[in-house]
Amino acid sequence: MATFVLIPGGWRGGWWYAPLAARLCQAGHAAHAITLSGLEETPAPGAHINLETHIADVLELLAVKDLSGVILCAHSYGGMVASGVADRAPERLAALIYLDAFASDDGQAWWDLAGDDYRRLVIAQAGHDGLTVLPRDGVDPRCRPHPLGTFVQRLRLTRPHPELPRVFVYATGWSATPFTAQYERLRSDPAWTVRTVACAHDVVNLAPDETFEVLIETARQIASA
Image (cartoon, rainbow, N blue to C red; front, side):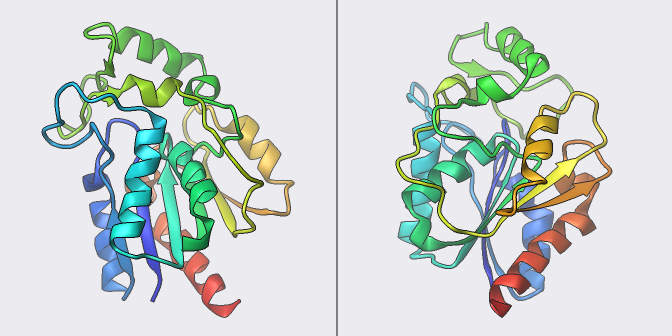
């Protein structure tokens, strides 16, 4: 049995992973889909939330539930969080999976990597309070305003990348993708396994079978190592 911790991308909570988490549990695995601070159904008012807050959220989950051998799986912005967690607690992890997610280096912020389209979105959607970024119109009503500090704080890495299996899933079906340069870089890096899926950014819902298979295949490879 494998243990998965699932980190959602911007504006979303653990609910976004519900179909995938249920499918993993039905296959005999454990799946923990986290909702990061400020993205709860009713967020606490006035909280100062940045990238370090979200990294601490996942570290707390790992510690409180005493999880080890974890396959940490992140989507989009969640890759920033996953990279921070891998730096702080590599001993609890077995692998990292980035689902069309940012695999950032030390000193980089989401803002640096997200591309002009998303930077314009943040500027437009943060003007209401200067603290949170409103979701786009027409998205799932469960989406919540995303804490602005998490997008602009630079990732701080304190050690070399841990020697963990790393998988990057690149979604090829959307024109505004900010992940093309990352794909080109990682596909020639022997430390990474790179997959492509022919869908837009929401890989969990648009390519559920392919996403599930990536997670299960990663678990199989760890079990057989």
